[in-house]
Image (cartoon, rainbow, N blue to C red; front, side, top):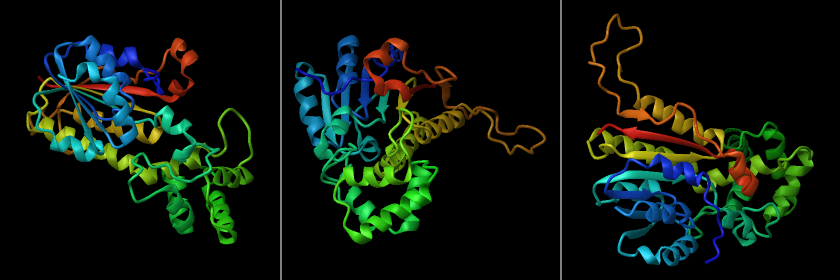
Length: 309
């Protein structure tokens, strides 16, 4: 079977789960099952749960994992809404790869590509909100917010203004048109396409990507405090600073033992509020060898947390 997506940091992900025992491994972002297939092959004692909101990915993964049908279950939905509903136990390993898959990026009809002839960017094609609505109907203030806070576009006011001006003359129908508008404001230079951050900001808005990550972190914290994740290992892969900041800050919260006010003269909370430990203090990044075969791994960061047993 030809695989349309190369799983990032695969060896590092597999090694991070080396201490798991029998139980359920949850792949919150199943995609094209690269990580899941490798996990099922290496760890014969585990059961597998795969979650994805993309029907095309689920259909592909069902075929790819057909040899593990007795150990694998697939669920359609976003991970933040599906994970809390899982009844399987015990959950011993959790993985989320927050990047957009190669097929979504490369398949022009999905509207993620700078050259796409439509304007979509939905990870779930049945969702109501698409990039078309954001670009053509959001007011300038809201566009500026998205480009500034989600895309971290330096010239966010100029870009938003250019979008509003362009759509006042003609509806913006394609990602290619949007890309050209951005390029008229931000000059080309360097390796990164001028529209990269603009597309990132709009994509995050369309798919509620940061809200999804917050939701997953919330449910993991809730389950851990309820004693439902004893000894579980959580590995999260991020691709830009906004995602990584959410994960890093939550991990820092989880390793904090004392929750007393910083101005308190002495600790009165017993210093037992930590939920576990980080596998490493710094994130794991792609090796030089991986970068040679998969350029999209260059911005990937893996952070792993181990809950108390």
